Amino acid sequence: MFLVGEAEPSAGIPGDDDDRTIDVRDLRMRYGTTDVLAGVTFDGRPGEVIVLLGPNGAGKTTTIEILEGFRMRSAGEVTVLGADPARGGERWRARVGIVLQSWRDHSKWRVRELLEHLGLYYRAFATDPGRQPWDVDDLLAAVGLTGQANAKISSLSGGQRRRFDVAIGIVGHPELLFLDEPTAGFDPEARREFHDLVHEIADDETTILMTTHDLDEAEKLADRILILAGGTIIADGSPDELSRRVSGQAEVRWCLDGTRYVHSTGDATAFVRDLFRQHDDGISDLEVRRASLEDTYMTMVQQFEAGRRSAAVREFEVVTSR
Image (cartoon, rainbow, N blue to C red):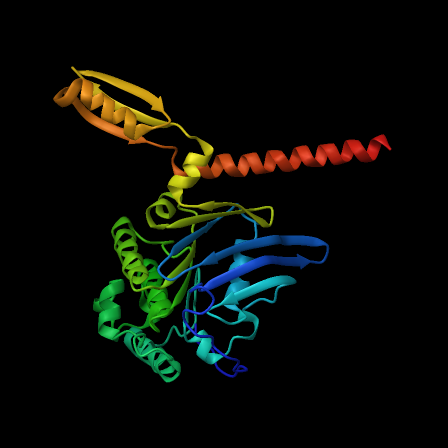
């Protein structure tokens, strides 16, 4: 998102610091006596799609607002595109795209004219010749709003408005894109088209940090999943890595001579290889399943909460026994 009238520190140089676009170390946020973030550490690199998951109140919004430069942190080190977001100026913001959950400004503008207007600001502060703002016609086609180019923003339907929110977030061709529940209000076709767009943006070496409550969507899009609970990251890995951590067993299903079989194994590749060695063409409807991301997420959060309750009970017992 582009803002004007701010201090102008160094915007950072792409590729510095081991090419990390996001570098968060021991991030902490306290409101009064409550620790919302209690030591969050992670990083992000060009072309990665990172999905931040967590229960309500876990600190997802606070984390992202700190990275966007909209909220001051209590402690910790945060570097985004080579700069501290708390002091990011115009040139730094011109390299960042943000899609909020909702944005109701500029309702009297027409779709095309607002995108063209924003594009001028991004073009004025673009530092990378290879990352000029999108051509407006190409952008409208990418988000599925070609037919609404001359419509007033106030006349857009909920789904069209959400597409427009996405267009505003990416108009500047950002190096880092924040997506907050981006497909809320999308129908299945629009969601599928948006997923294709996310992959296209990531292929252009843009880092994407996204929140969503749609775990199926997270599983389809994420290179990495971060699970935030209790103000800290309790899991960091690909969907497959996290499912293996929760359950090392894969479920193999197949049909043989009209009979359906199911088998759990720690090495699905070796088991399937042996299965075909024994039965060859007799195998049909083969399917290998691991725990879904929803199963994995629920298990990890429940285990974390159970651990916290146990720790609280032990602390209470120690205090009362004195």
